[in-house]
Image (cartoon, rainbow, N blue to C red; front, side, top):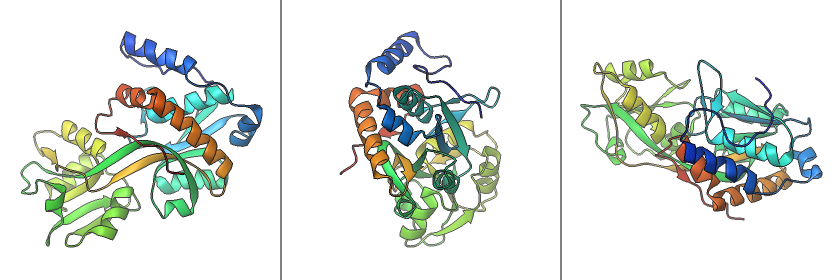
Length: 281
């Protein structure tokens, strides 16, 4: 992965006014961090950040150019600017991959949806976004809301160890969960639902909205109304590194108050994603 020097704003085609505001924000919001904080958080001299490579709530990777854009890219770029170091974005296939990078020292920070079991493995800090979750169904499904899905005889597909699977496996009272090992492609989702291998497939609301928009006429899809769990997207550092966690809390608190995070979500067209509240100390 290419190592990038910190620079204000992102690349890509965006509106002139929006781009100007974003560039000004990067200059105005926040002073640089001191050298001790830089050494603690980026000991190699490069800020290395692991994230969920397939989750649009965190970032998107252009298949042609490899450019990574979205909230993660914006947050890491701004943090690197304040630390006065270059940065490196490391896509991971799943949450355990992010955790492995953080625990193994191949990444200085990670990005994860908060989950109690994960909090025993890493230190969470700086919640910046709220991810909502729903189910994807065939357009002709009798299910209408997320509450409808928890009934006898309903099978819900979910990716093993993802936020949706962990929550549903612990909380469903009537429906059963059928796990798959990796995030299905669009074609796989249409096949799984089209062949009625499951009645619904658990997705974060952003993924579900994009799958509905991408679905062809052969297997039209629909997202159920409502969200069964709202989960914070946060920074993660090594377990016990409370100093870095506190610094990241302050960093995100400032960006939240300034409007930086809302601007980043809007720029990435993440209309289903909210800005997280400050972490309770």
